Amino acid sequence: RRVPPRRWVSVVDRRELERRAARAIETKRWDEALSSVWPLVERARVVDDELRSALRMMTTALIRLDRKRAAATIQLFLGDTQAAHATSDDPRDRARVAVERRDHAQAARDFEAAGFEGHAALALERAGNDTGARVLWERLENHMRLRDDPYTAGLVRFNAARAAARPLARGAPRSEL
Image (cartoon, rainbow, N blue to C red; front, side):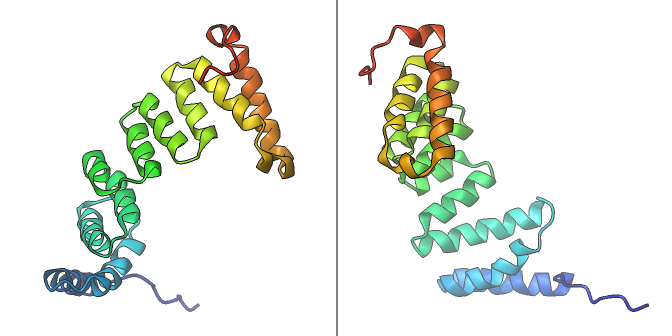
């Protein structure tokens, strides 16, 4: 019985790829750095120091290539919310940073600024702002784009009804936000 060949980067290959990536970063060849570090990241199965090191190299190259959203995603994966916040000013990334920091009110503001009203409503619910969540769910109920998506429209209606049933949201006027 024949054993299929293994498809993983050997220790020697890994070290050579790390050296190539480091040299490329030192000489500001960002695309080359990414192509050297990508196989290291792609084949990782566990989060360890080697993967973290490769991801940090990747982040450096992505920032230099002005791919800040991708870099911020990696920084969030590594648990560095401060770096992710400093790297990207996109409201979607700011919202994800706020979620990681468990600042749900800020996440709601950032999700809404990004046009993600459903995400904003969920964040408001987590922040305990039932009235604000209800207003957003009701606003979302009237979106034209939901007319062609009955499943999502049903979810929005369900969440709007659930939010309206909460004691703090019952007496709130519809135009509160």
